[in-house]
Length: 302
Ligand code: PSU
Ligand code: MN
Image (cartoon, rainbow, N blue to C red):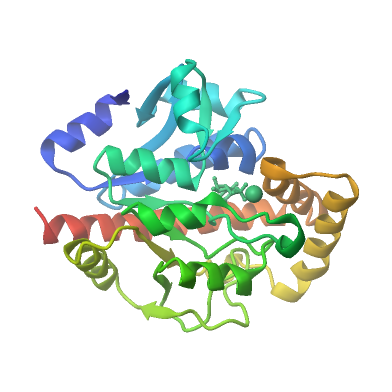
């Protein structure tokens, strides 16, 4: 069911550190052609930081761990690609389908491929208004049950961050802010929330991952890595834009899987592209930290 790219297969054989990357950010999170350019830059960032990138997607009913340049280009240009989470994965495989993997689905595939570290932009979480819509991303449940350390810039600021933290606490997911006390808020370095946990080095994060496994605890860790200061957008600049995009989504009856892509797209328009620039930079930053964690994990369990 799993096909490894030649680069990933060689890394597996040599026991080199691997970093998983998702594909929904490419197909649903960023516009063409920045999506392809970013996917390639993120892979290169992992390579230049001593690890091997494994971008994950489902192509024609097969899990691909590591995509060739042609496969990546095709996926980035494709229209109406399915957005696959835990619930969709097996049906897509059974029907020979093609789809992009969300954080949840990427974690599942990475774990099956023996990859313990994954870099993305921001995980899904509890949406604003979830008390009525019940819209809570399957990413949260996945973090509770699949042993992959996910490096993100926190949860996306379009979400209800206090509720997202509450659910993660209930599920027993470690939420670790890197190098600061405050929970990062995706496009902004800080939120007004204190992160439940804080670690300052990749070595400690890798050790915590290993200890969790040794304790027999299922699930992974959410590593919340703040966007570099020079690329952040101030939270008070974003707040009215997020509010506008959210009320437009509601007025247009956008629901389910379409909510996050709609909001990201509208915020891109309303910030005249600034949100995309920030998103790209924070993913690159996460790729660097994920590579360091993967290297440290390799040293712990050679
Ligand atoms: N990070 C980004 N952009 C994205 C995503 C993450 O910078 O588009 C994707 C991930 O695939 C994540 C998904 O799993 O957004 C969340 O979707 P939902 O809220 O429908 O669970
Ligand atoms: Mn949702």
